[in-house]
Image (cartoon, rainbow, N blue to C red; front, side):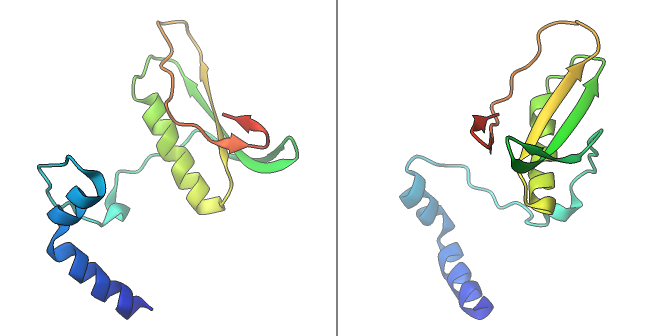
Length: 118
């Protein structure tokens, strides 16, 4: 199976620009990036707990923030993606803002847990 995958990858990637234009329409400035994602910077969530929400197994991640952080929605997404990959469970992300120091950024990232879209 792997040999067939590699053959198709080589075939498609010969004309990656044409392939992406066919799939996505308007696209430009296509530049290859390293696929070695294991070298990304280390980010550690404050907590991770296995739990059951509405009877469904999940992970709860509770982060405590004392300062405003516009990157917190993205960071919580990264934590959740890594935890879902590691444990195979959806993640409920909770941020506790210790001080009222301005608006709380909302996250564009969502996940279903039980009947709730979080």
